[in-house]
Image (cartoon, rainbow, N blue to C red; front, side, top):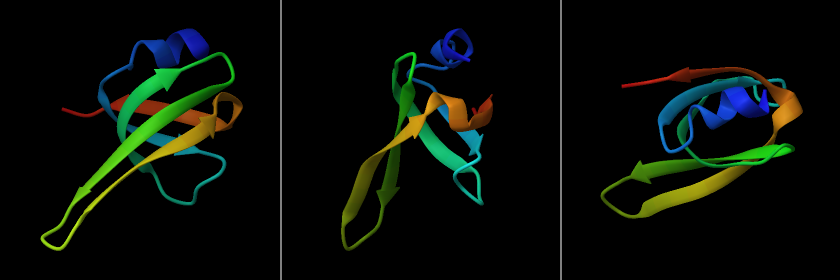
Length: 67
């Protein structure tokens, strides 16, 4: 999974994991043999809500690149 996740580094993706009920969307900003970091961006009129999600690589079921 590590090599596969590296193919999506710095790309906007959809990730499905064992840890979430819904798919996660964002840009993969870091991949290690143990985890990947997904950067999520929300732009609203009132505030910017950007944050990173650290996911164990062993919890990832699928990664799909989005255009």
